[in-house]
Image (tube, rainbow, N blue to C red; front, side):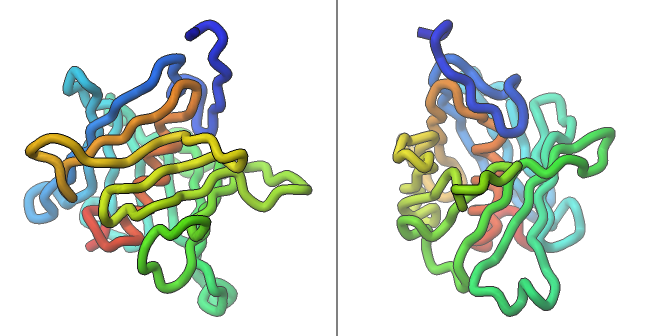
Length: 203
C-alpha cells in the first residue's frame, strides 16, 4: 500500500507519510510557556509545535516548528484597508528559509465574524493558484467543538480533528491525517483555526 500512495506535499514531501498518522495536540499554558501547542505522535515524540502571540509577541502571526524546533512555516493574517473592507479574513502561509519567511505555499480565508467552522466557510488555496480553481481544501464541522475535518476539493477527507479518551477536550485532542497528505500543512491549518477561535495562539 505504501509504495502506491500518492504524496500531496504543500510544505514538503518529508512531512507526507504512506501510512495514516495519528497526532495528539496538547495546548501549552499561556502563563507558563506563552501558549501555542505541541503535537506528538503515538510514541509521545514531539513532531510539531506552534508558537503564537504569547511567544512571538505580535498578533496575527504564527510559526510552525518541526520536532527539532526548526521553524518550517510562517503564517500571518493579512491587514490593510482593502482587507478591512473585505467580508473575509485572509491568512498566508510561507516556507521558512534560514529563519525568514520566503516562498508562499498556501492562503486561507474565513468569513467575518467567525462563529463556527460551518461547511464551506473556511477554504484553503495552495500556491501557485490555478486559473480554473479558487480553492483546494475546505474545513467542515466545528473546530471549537473538536469535530472538524479538512477535505479536498473532490471531497476526500485529508484530516479529521476529534476527541477521545478521558483526558480529551479543548486542551487535548487528536488529529488523524490520511496517507499521502502533508502533516505540516494540516498543523498549519489547525494553528489558524485555533487563532480564529481565540484559543492557545491568541494573546
